[in-house]
Image (cartoon, rainbow over all chains, first blue to last red; front, top):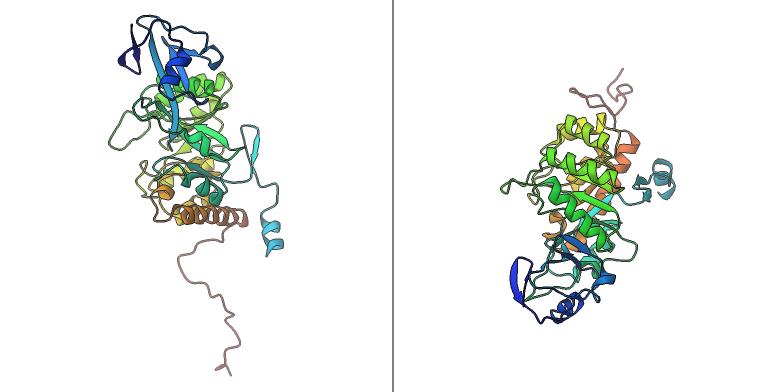
Length: 66
Length: 267
């Protein structure tokens, strides 16, 4: 099924949690922050949140900046 | 020497910001470094306790290591809202940074102009007001304007961060007179943010009475960033001491330093 991650369409399996999606892309380090359909999804909910068709995810990390 | 420094620079000369007594008045940004590995070395040399970083979409194809993993423990994290063009976007970034465990300090940076990256004081004021009301320690990056600074103060900013010159330009204190007025008229700490390119310029800002300076590009793009971080540390301490010591009066004409009597040729 298709979801939108950081503005780009992406295919995932229908039984995929947010945590698995992050793990598949090697982005499970704790300071990542996830927005699901415009709402912040706290880290403690990553494992229990199943992705739904058409979900829009923003996955952000800290980078160098001034 | 130590005794002299202590008499001029009492141990209580810390900067109280967001409920924290900061010993170091040099804030350091983490952008533009050639590698993450050099960042902890730079921070150690700088003595800085407050460090800025940015929040960005993860690059799926090439996930980078998180910059936070390279910061010493007890560092105060100051996420910026770079990339925001409106107050609404800045508030969203602040909330995301807080959710990521970044604490409650935030540097508001709202820019629409891409050539000079000058901040939008009006949107900055709106974001400052909302985030201060929510309990954030808000440090707004702003164009040095007295009216805007007064409004930011009233809106609950913890400090005011005027630019010295455009971000990353290394052109120093082009806005010196406007910053001087802010230091004179605003009771909040004035932290000179962008454009400082040389240690001497950091010292100059501190001598004028700036509470702190934030430096990134000047250190990150130096031939030796670790040496430059140390140079900025020393410059900030020197400038602060110069300010506390109270510089002497400037004069147009000479005033002899040596006595004007008892010359050899007299009599």
